[in-house]
Length: 96
Image 1 (cartoon, rainbow, N blue to C red):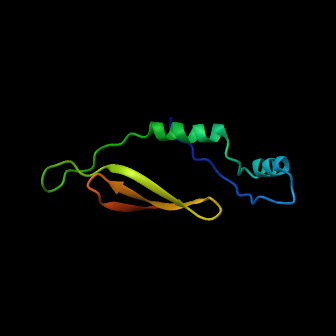
Image 2 (image 1 turned 90 degrees about the vertical axis):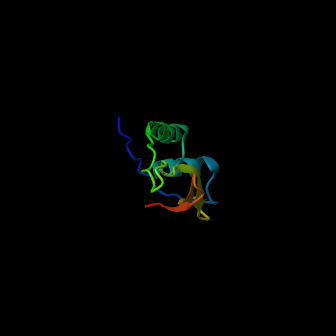
Image 3 (image 1 turned 135 degrees about the vertical axis):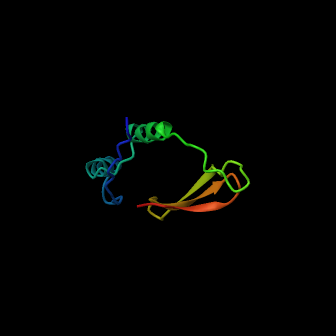
């Protein structure tokens, strides 16, 4: 089954509210990270089938992803990142 992208809302923690009120408000705004949402993401990642890149001029298989480093803003939102390939080159990751 194809991964269905989640639609996330936003919520700014309100110091004048209790923790329970903030959690309820974040949940209402669809901005609360829950175990079920994380499992959904993990299941989607597990479904991804990676294939090697095209062969280079030397006939060897192309580089694949070795690691990914994500960056986030002050509010904790993922804003981008960098992928490091097996040949140690890097590629930017954009977030839309």
